[in-house]
Image 1 (cartoon, rainbow, N blue to C red):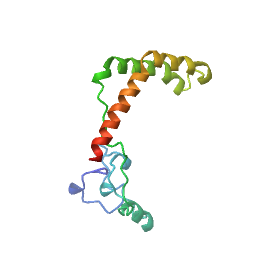
Image 2 (tube, rainbow, N blue to C red):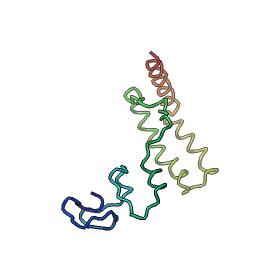
Image 3 (spheres, helix red, strand yellow):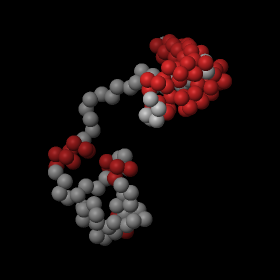
Image 4 (cartoon, rainbow, N blue to C red):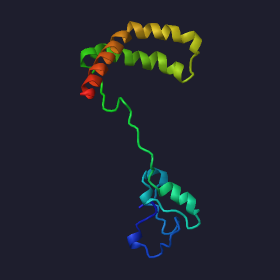
Length: 135
């Protein structure tokens, strides 16, 4: 589908540009599935093999996959910390303000917004979730 509706296109000969129709076109990288990608007839075989061969190494999942923080017990503090992050940390992160000059005050404002309580609740919930996963 990235290069047109080939069921209705008699001129498809393996070239990615054949049958191009702007109403169907989007870049191949947007598809995310090599099975739907057309390659130029001059594409080297070793490159095609690399892209289309399933990996043999096992997938390692993150040990935190599936954990989700319940913010209800810390709703006010969590909202305050997010607000402080946006107003004090993001400008530092983006380089809008000087790190050395503004970070100490930003850290103090996060602590005033009860960052320590948010972190403690996160650790508590995460440890309980980990213990449940071990069963």
